[in-house]
Amino acid sequence: MPAHATGGSWADTTKTVTLSIVVAVGLMAFLWSGVITRTGASLVTTAENAFPPVFHTAGGGHSVDGTYGLLSGKSPSSAQLLEQYQKQALHQRKTVLPGTYLPLSKATAAPVHALDTPSLPATKVGRLLADVHIPVATVNSVVRGLASKGEQIFIGVGLLTLLFVRRWRHRVGRDTYCLAVGSVLMVIAVTVLPGLSVSYGILRAFEQALIITAPILVIGSLAVFRFLGRVWAGRAATVLALVFFVSTIGLMPQLLGGYPAQLNLNNSGVYYDDYYTQPQEVGALQWLGEQPGTLPAGVQAEDYTDRYYFTAPNDVNPDQTVTDIYPTLIRKNTWVVLGYSTVRTGVASAPISGDLVPYRYPTSVLNDNKDLVYDDGGTVIYK
Image (cartoon, rainbow, N blue to C red; front, side, top):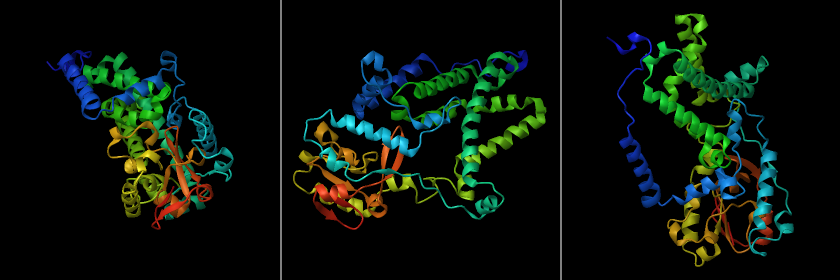
């Protein structure tokens, strides 16, 4: 007799997640982070930021991606985030020896202004919508918000449906259900605990959880539309899923415009400028690597990508690592690298609360306090 004939059995009775599998995964994680890549130290820092009362630390901040949550508040503006970053920079100056940084009066001589993330221009379809007083920027943001919150609702409804309505259990195995619960709890932990949302990323955690929770999400959407009847519930859930799909993969912004350029579909935008390495940057870094005294002085560059990182990090002490180019954090003796995007557009980005906030970079601070030692038209280096 089929397993679902009783109305209360799970889809399978064979355990796929056993103790041996858990031990094997834990061992592989230990070998990868502790022995092979030696990145285990970051786990300690993450734990300290996540549990400040336990480790007596200041703790980390919360990512702006938390605004996608069901109970989230309004997202802070770019100006508010940059003001927060300035306060962090001032605090950081107090933790090092006096004279390490440029005098505060010189570092702040030129004002720093936050900028809104640029959006794609409206397409022909987007302009048609604007002509009938439907702003495409609002359409994109509303659909994105509905997609993120709708998926969370459907997952929650799906978990409750499988827990209390036994006739749905023949669709999902017990192991899958338990893994889905664990995935949801991990996303909640990343969202709630300070530091985790920034160091790991809420959206990344949620996307990874969808690998497990996708079947639960489908069941939840069918349960929500159950009042329409069996046939129309499936149709309504399918249409909504397609709308969410078109938005989240970036197709809707491409068709309408009025939304920041998606990295996977455009050779433009904040993330393209920050992560794509231009030939001029390669040449500048090759030149810098040949200069005497590069390591003792240290390098300052936009530090959220690995293009500027040292190839032998074990030979670099904490004072020689790549640090940010934010004016308040400019040190007296470091090499300062301005990349292609900053040179061409005059705009830099600061990593704040898990987001990249663009701001108008005051190059006058460098021109007045450092020497220009390299310029290839796309990348400049000061010393």
